[in-house]
Length: 304
Picture 1 (cartoon, rainbow, N blue to C red):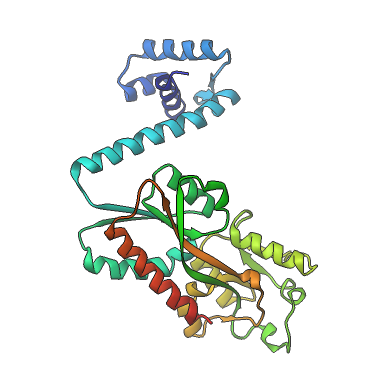
Picture 2: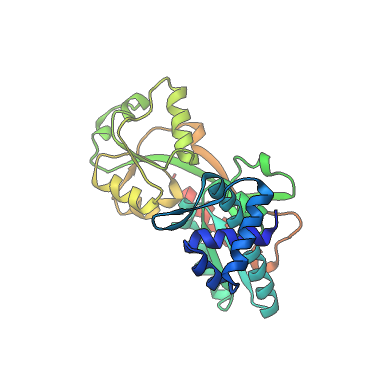
């Protein structure tokens, strides 16, 4: 498949008409139409069809479009990186987990910027697997995430553990669970929970924990990827949540939420810096990582 034709296809689908796409691409409409006819002929399938609102993709066209977008994103990324190198701008791009971006990373960045006020820092928040994929695609200088799931991305990667992250189950201070002399997971699952979406690591940990205790998972759920929303809901209702200790130090010290007295070894995980073996970290990046490590260790201990 000709990559240029795939990019043309993506533009037609996004613009919804040949005329608009041709104008956007600065090519003639007949030339664009001929290019699409050739692409469909080469593949032996129909990719586009006319709908009530304009040109829309067929099922096969939608499939090809998903790959065409990736090709375009890779090209845009290459252009941006080349442009940055020409400008000699110092740009550090890091990827991190949502839980870390609400506590550890901002504090570390504040310290780091005192020594590097003119450096441009880009912080991208993603789930673990997307962070690793982004690192492979050279979107990040490094990522800060879990060591779990790392084995499938071992080739060309290096990692160093920065601190041990403790997960605790939190509730509002006046929650009825604090009146019980001893707690079990059977007690906890009777209450509503606020959890990340299915597939996120903390959700997976919770599901495995209750399964190992022979208990059904919570049935009353709110799914949310926002740490701030989760903390607010826990502080103002009977909802429970599993959160990293470092992410709630302020709320705990202010008496808004409290950790429940239930501990399991599975609630501990290692947080590491992960980077590409062929792209060793420079001194500027290493300074930022040192601050992340120091603050991560301090906040995790403070939640003990």
